[in-house]
Image (cartoon, rainbow, N blue to C red; front, side, top):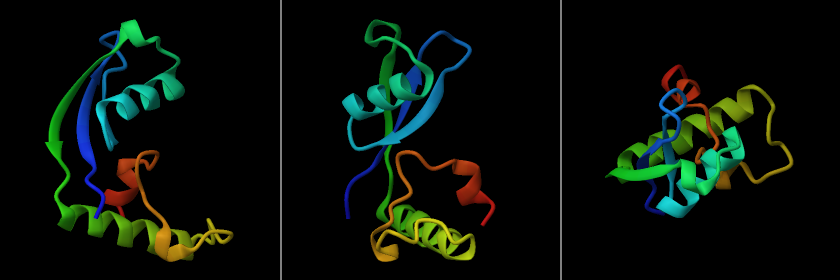
Length: 94
C-alpha cells in the first residue's frame, strides 16, 4: 500500500489543520489549494505514518459510500482512494 502520512499544517492560527498526504510538499500544496495560503505562511509537521490497516478501512468506507450515493461512477470503484481530499467526518460516520 501507499504510505500516507498525517501532517499538522500551521498557517494563521485560526485555520491550522491536519492533512493526510504522501509527503510534506503535498500537504503544503493541499492547504494552499484549499485555503489560499502562500508557502511562507505555512509550517508543515509530520505527525505519524497512517498504518496500513487504517488505510484499508478508509478505502473500504469511501468505496461503500460511493456505491451507496452513486458517486464516482465514472471511475473504477476498486481504485478509489479517500485521501487527500476526503472529509474525515465522512469516514468516521460510515
